[in-house]
Image (cartoon, rainbow, N blue to C red; front, side, top):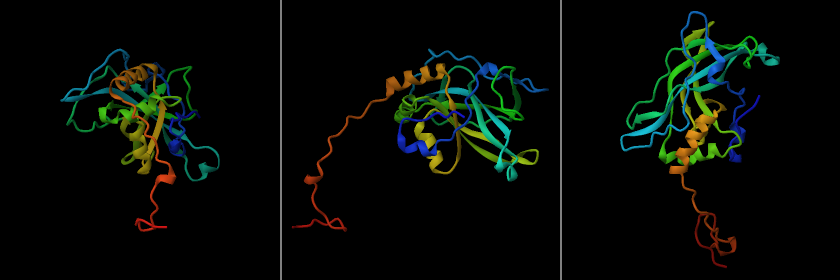
Length: 239
């Protein structure tokens, strides 16, 4: 399975390795559902930050419930992983004080013939989320762009109140394009998966980063020989 590695090396040990994502035209609604999976997005559409709002992209998140194989199947029959993040429309402005969006009730979808699919797996689409860009987190967005393969990250939790075959359902909480967001969630031992971001999303992100990110100048480090000697309590030492 392919992962979306990030440029900084100190985070590599934390990165999950999900399957590569699909595109918006690779899913169809399951029987009895009328859900539309993803909508076209124009990469040139820009919503500049303002005193009252921030640019955001509406997204649909697809979670996959797949059978566990190998020795682990003795203890766990199924597992949830992130299958895809699909742009669900054009970027828009989110008010500064707007509450965090909550995913709508899931609807089952199926990969179209010819799309990459996991045998025996079921796919569930959650709409209603969006990925927001923050000017004060331009560094985290920059790090994502400068990784070998820029990604969406999704923080999700198992919901004990939503059961499927008697087991908790995976519910996405937040979708982000920020490397720093993903790092904080992983440090907090939350469930975080990632999938490659499509080209139009990368172009949209590049325009934002180009305008709001500034590289910090490298500071010359003082040679060790010039540093004052101190004891273990930080007090100056005379020789």
